[in-house]
Amino acid sequence: MPDQRVTQQIRQLVGDRAKGCCEYCLSQAQFSPQSFSVEHIYPRSLGGVTELDNLALACAGCNGHKYNKTQAIDPPTNTMVDLYHPRKHNWAEHFAWNEEYTLILGLTPTGRATVEALQLNRIALQNLRAILFSVGKHPPE
Image (cartoon, rainbow, N blue to C red; front, top):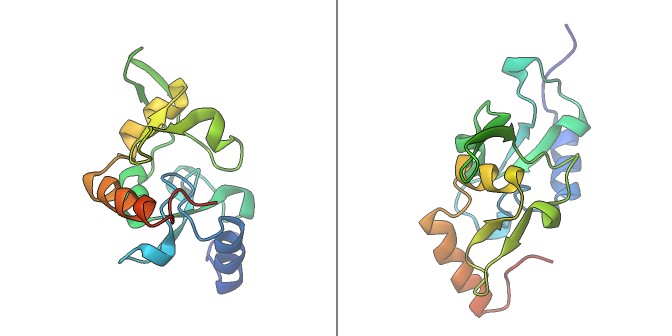
């Protein structure tokens, strides 16, 4: 069995690639009271491997809500769809911000399912986004 540990070097590469932001909700690690995790996009519990193309930087909330999910229900169509995959999908094709930059809007079935499954609009995130937007620190570049 190959080594499945996420080394410090891998952790650094994943964090640098993500520019210090959760790759799902775009929260910025520098403003988070909790540390971010390197998560397996396709979970190890389902056969996912520890390779850069299968790793994403995730805040504690997104990582916890995603757990080992790879699919979820798209609310308007009630169909099972793949969740957003940071290595295969472009964030802006699946999500947008509302006018106040406090809510992430799902633009596609994948986007909508991901917003719901990972709870990308948790109230604490909405509050943090509003404060950071008011001082010019949100959305991240």
